[in-house]
Amino acid sequence: MSRNTNKLVVPEAKEALNRFKMESAKEVGVDLKNGYNGDLTSRQNGSVGGQMVKKMIEAYEKGL
Image 1 (spheres, rainbow, N blue to C red):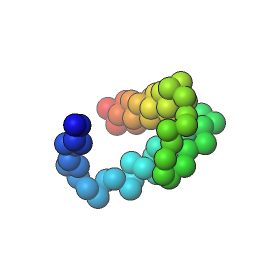
Image 2: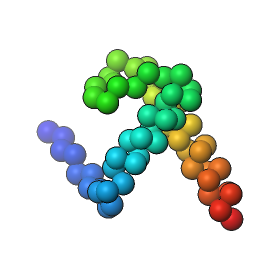
Image 3: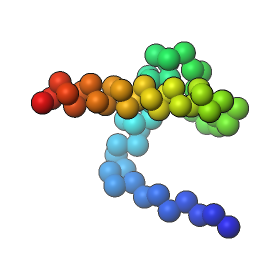
């Protein structure tokens, strides 16, 4: 039996991160839904995550 033990450190950030994910998905041409996205391929999910990381690194580098 698997249990999700992830806890949000800053619960208020959940909605902002969800908007960021949806924006990143749109940029790479992946149609995310607000609910179930289990029909997406690993490649599609990976491209969204990769785009998010790329944007976070760019934002960090601009702040240096």
